Image (cartoon, rainbow, N blue to C red; front, side):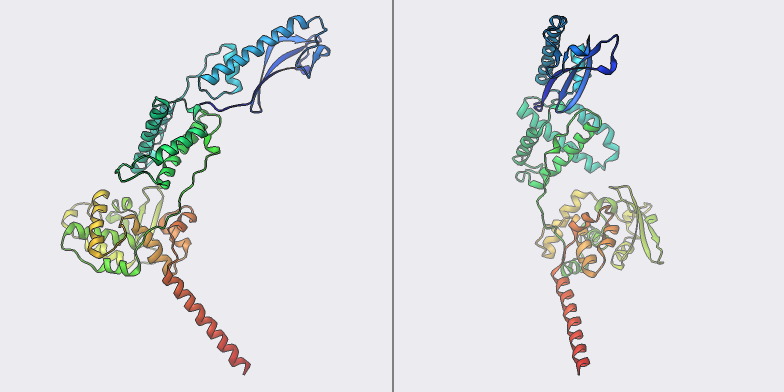
Length: 418
């Protein structure tokens, strides 16, 4: 599994280190253009050295002893290279040098070592759901290695481009966790993003010399992100349900449609999160769960009305939360019921509320994308552009306004000409 490398062995002399008229001879190992040199404990008068051949001139008296010795050194270095190659190691000049001199090598780091180190050092830095995704990726990778290599772990250094391609093929044929068909392109690429991050960590730890992702391109399929239209949002907002759990889920979804707050952040909103903003109006102040960045957001009247409706909710008595708690799994299950009751054909998920906020509530009403990006907590406006949709009604309105301005301008020019 080791990458094919350009490996050469040569010999040079160091005339800058002359001692009693003799220059020391150095072996030079070259691997993909990277050189490693060391003394072979022999020296020669510079005039007896054949630079092109990398050996002592054959007619000299010392050639009979030194040249055969250099041949033995070359042969042993080639043997060291072959040993390292067969053992699946990434081969560096220093590694070959240590092998030549019998210096004990550091134990080979395996994919299981990388997984363990990543999980130990990154667990507290990742959100629980994100960490769970890493665990799934690691599970799939070990399954793949077991199937292909008959072992769940291999040396990290033996991962190459071909192995990544084979893993992609494995993932594309694999059923998802819910068993509803094979993994699509974007899900597959998300697994590869996690593998890439772990290999980047291995590179920083110097467990690998070259990252195989240098030549592997992660490419996502562009997909339209679902969102509710203005009419759908109004229908849902005005609908009341007699079943408390359904009403709660509807309220939370609508609240997110008017704030852009994700499920995980909404669950941690407390009474202290509601503050008076710079404009004297109600704002929400909290910390994004994903990025740990603090944020302050103005609360639109539709969202504030929902907050007020839960002030005296019986399940919140003596508790700091703005809303009753509910699991994400149950929430999304109830959203399917709500979609059926409202006649919404699209698959309703809680994350669709953020898309609705970005499109129907803000961008389609003329809010600049820079402001939307800030409100959504994005560090890069390109992320916001993924959510953003140019809605046909907005295009129609903008073009209608343009026609009016052009018509007014034409009439003014006509009057001026008279």
